[in-house]
Length: 271
Image: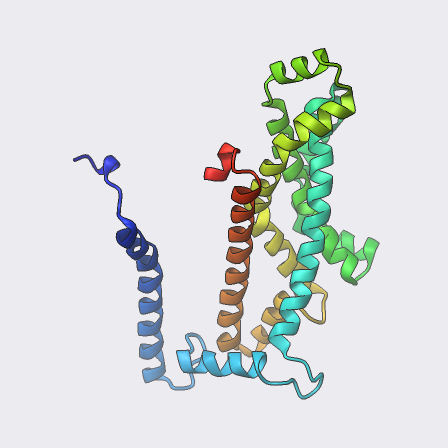
């Protein structure tokens, strides 16, 4: 039997999913034990006990200065910024994608502009955002919006162009106006693709958020990671990185399930 035709059963698939993570953890803790045995004060590869103590201190003990549970406070601040940025980007990307993909008068100026904007490195204009919008919440949200909106818009524009012209012609034959076409034909086709596009840009959105928080913030997951790096506090950094990864994965899984439940007919939901 050819390898390309072999599929694992449920138990085998679960084992294959867990195997690389188990190997990474095994390699890490073997290296940690070796380094700590040689130098108990080594900070590069902290043990599981050290990281557990750090998590207890940050997540389950009140900070003496602020009285907050720092890990949850950081998570709340970062997720709030991310949610606002993604929401604004989704709305703008949908509007621009529809305009550029279906209306020729808007497509001519918008399509090249979106192409150029999507090539601008958002982190390169971060200082400009801080100058224009200040060091508050707005600049952090705007970095996310500027970073992912052109990508979302271009993806939705391409999807809008792929809608069969026969559907549009039939709708117009039945008397549909431009707004009716957009609301009844085009928008339902693009909504599931919007959710899938959001999944694809989640990693970039987190990157922009962490970068903005690291440079100018007083709370947030990115702020905490870059704050403790000066002390080489890997027992804090590694759990925070794992927590950020878990949050991002949970958001991706949530968007995937939402796509399947809301738009089961869409072929992209099977991906």
